[in-house]
Amino acid sequence: MPLRFRLIGLVCFVLVVSLALGGLIAYSNASRSVRTEMRAALLVGRQTIETAIERVGGSGDPMRELDDLVASFKGNRHLRVRLGGKAATFAAPVVERSALGAVPAWFVGLIGVPPETERVPVVVGGRDYGAIVLETDPYNETLEVWNEFSESLMTLTMFGGLTMILIYIFIGRTLRPLNRLADALEEIGDGHYRTRVSGRLTPELSRLRDSFNRMAARLAETDAENRRLNEQLLSLQEEERGELARDLHDEMGPYLFAIGVDAMTASRLLNETRGIEAAEHIQSITEAVRHMQQRVRHMLGRLRPVGLAEFGLREAIENLVAFWRRRRPEICFQAAISPECEELGDLASTTICRVVQEALSNAVRHAEPKLVTISIDRNGDEIRVAVADDGRGMREPGRLGYGLTGVSERVRAVGGQLRFSNRLGEGFVVIAVLPHLRVQDPLSTATAEATGT
Image 1 (tube, rainbow, N blue to C red):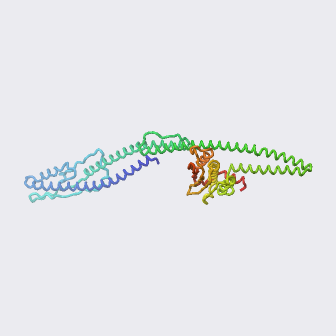
Image 2 (cartoon, helix red, strand yellow):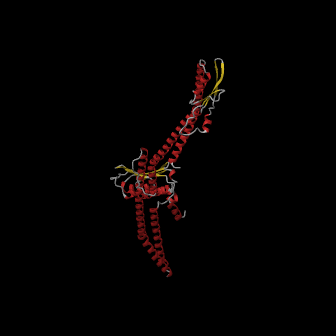
Image 3 (cartoon, one colour):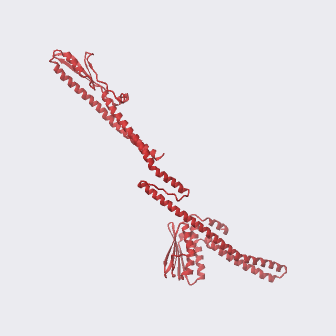
């Protein structure tokens, strides 16, 4: 149900409850008021008759004066008066009219004030003239209460109707910016991140509008960054494919051609029973195959860290350290890997290996260090990777090479952050903070299938 109809329904409920409570209070007051008014009218009428009877005693025609006394009550609102024994002497109250019509029977029954009768004996000069009968008639008083009740009901109805109309209009105007915001959210959902909400709003909605616009701007920046990263990723993929193609052409092509020539020559020599010479060509084929295996292993290492899929993160990091330890034995390498980091997802492990690989390469090539430390630990849902050296540091820390720039973008692509701490003459530190990625890289499955594991 729309919000405006909910509010109108709530107002209607409050009005109905208020009307019911007000009706109960009005009923109690009205019944008591009519009953009190009738008793007062009866008391005043009795006192009036008793006073008049005392004056009748000194006149020559008591019956006439009694008739005049009864007639004097004509026009009274609440009393019906008659002289007992003479039906002709009778005074009835005037029935009042109302613009709202007669009092409904249910309302008369609801008020529940029955007529009351009282007899006043008339004795003049020792002679009994019967009695004057007083009877209350609550109709006119009930009509007055009905008029007040009807006017109050119409006032409340008009007030309630006007309130509902104002609520409908006001809520409609208030919800109009929310409708615009809902439309804007749909546009954001469709990928239109340049959508903005403008216009004057209430303070509460102004905060919502400003928050939405900031969110849309952030999404636009993120979308642009993702597009840039995707373009750069495609460029890097094309570069890697180009390098692999060149390696295959330059490294594998000549050896494959040489293997083919040696195989044909060895076959011909074997047919000519020149086994010793054929063995030399077979040895050449074996050396060429061994060299090709090394080159293939090198290419696979560029595509994926060696040992990562087969043995895990620790083995892959140790292979990276062993690679540089064999080539630079004068440098001390220390690696500390938390046990909680050995069972990470494939994407997180690969990213960590790339960070360590690039940091080690930079430290060995440019820093001239004596000590390089590698630290990988996990704190909750964050993984912290730090590679520090005690070398000469970076002379221009604001200018990062292509390697560190690529690693930084790789870390950002998985939702992490890459920071650098440079101390000129004292060393350089690469720190990567990654989220604990539970989603496996689809490439891991393909790698496992290719390796037969």
